[in-house]
Image 1 (cartoon, rainbow, N blue to C red):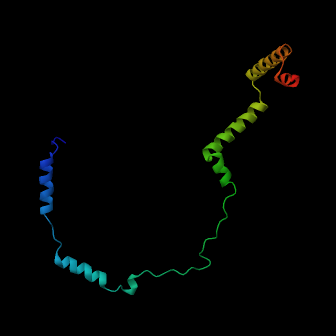
Image 2: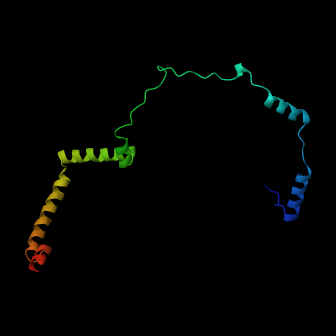
Image 3: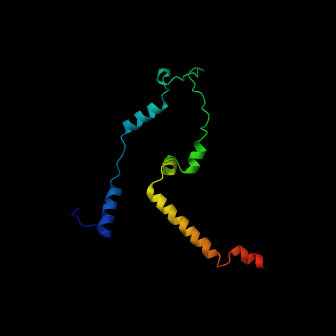
Amino acid sequence: MGEKPLDKKELDDVFAAARANNPQVREDLLLWIVEEAEAPAEPEALPMPIPNKPETRQPVKAPPVFAPVLVQLGGWRALAGLGAASLLGIWIGTNVPETLDVLSLEASVAAQAYDAAEAFAPSYSELLSEG
């Protein structure tokens, strides 16, 4: 880590020394490799193929029915979120908290005010009917 980087001349010297050192493979090693490659394989060294017996084959399974639907919804995580949101919606729908009663009361008051304001201002459909 504390060494300085080599400049171009020093780097060229290192590469020239590496090119000058040309290691040779021993002749006896080359002869042994060639003999092993050319020697016929012994029959007991070869793996024997296992015949396909009907009882050992695995039955082909039909593709799952809901897999494409699951992929289109976004996977298991999205499906879990959708299920949790659905259950929460059912729970809130059956057990209405008091705060939702207040919010629905305010929404109904706002809807009544909107209906009252509509009497003074024409709606879009009335503008279309006038021509």
